Amino acid sequence: MFTSTTDPTHTLDQALRDRARQVLPGGMYGHMAARFQAPQFPQFMDHAEGARIWDVDGNEYLDLMCSWGPILLGHHNPAVEAAVAEQNQRGDCMSGYSPRMVELAERFTDLVPHADWAMFAKNGTDVTTLLCTIARAHTGRDMIYVARGAYHGAAPWCTPHPAGVTAADRVNLGHFEYNDLDSVRDAIRGNESRVAAILVCPIRHDSHRAEETATPEFARGVRQLCDEIGAVLAIDEVRTGFRIDPHGAWEQYGVRPDLTAMSKAIANGYALAAVLGADFLKKAAGSIYTTGSFWFSANSMAASLATIEQVAQPSFIQNLNAAGARLAAGLTQQAAAQGFALDVSGPPALPMLTFANDPDRALGAAFATCAVRRGVFLHHTHNCFIGKAHTPQIIDQILQRTAVAFEDLAMSPQAEGWTPVATSQDADNAKTSKLG
Image (cartoon, rainbow, N blue to C red; front, side):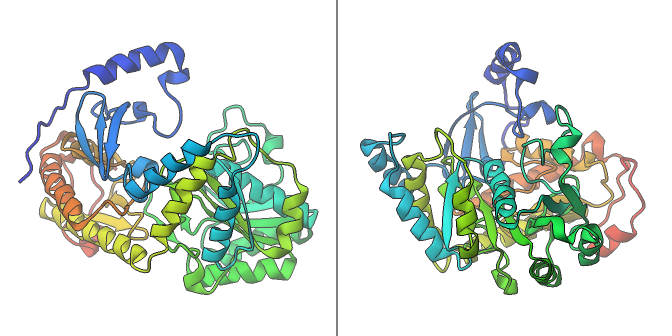
């Protein structure tokens, strides 16, 4: 059984945090800011390889966050790194576009059935915002409808945090309840002629809850509704792209969107985002002005081409799903052995861990702390990510470490008074924990 130190040192990490507080707002900003986690979580990483990351103090972790999604093939994937090195010899940021841009657009339109053209940017927020702009340019309408609580990026129109955001930033944004087609119809009733787009994620990405996947009925119903009112159906696959189905998350339902936003995993850690669109929107997409000094980096596009070569293999998604299922089964069994009811929800390649009777995620935070102290890097309010580097051997190594983490959790103060449950049915009937 794996037995590492339960208190890895963070001396250099703490020194860097002290320096950061002098020169960075809040000491660190963004979704990877460790100040929102327990003190045992490192803030600064030194290097990474495959499924492993090392912090600046030399502590090693098996990485279940995959850099919060971008790492799909493993850190330093040899084929991707070779493609980037070759392109870098030619040039990355040049006074013109690389042929890689055309090649990548061709590859995306070959891979994704609903895509007739592609545009490229750098971040998920770039492309979700572009979806809205293109839809408005095509329809001449102003309203965008999104699921209440859904995360579509960090721009003022969509950020989940209100600081610095004005009412005018959100005036053309409407909301509905996820997976509730009647709610969508109610939300737009009376405004049908103003709806430019309905924007949906394949998975409901709200923090502090289990993941909820769009049902076939909802996906088909939203597609039909958009067709009825002449609105654009836009799908936000920034997080899910290449991990559910490289051809499109709703292909399994026979539903094809008009616009798709992708980022995170499409270049295995190199900064790249894409908008994919249907032919009837090509003129509108060409009519808007959008650009960025670094949006046309040839290195990132070379990385994406090399990534797609591996993603397009027939066994790729099958292997991701198998790894995710192996992890979920192991974690669920380990939790039950210690008297906890753990729910692993979402698609196998994007597993979300939640405990029964844990509304404020206190037990989830305690487990994440135990896991990171035992050398497994995960997060208590965000889904994990499975990648190609999570081989059966790596998954087994992770489970060796989490078995000890669950033992630690059972002995922790956070577990005091916890109602032991061993099955999902027991979890539903269990009394509320003292943590609730």
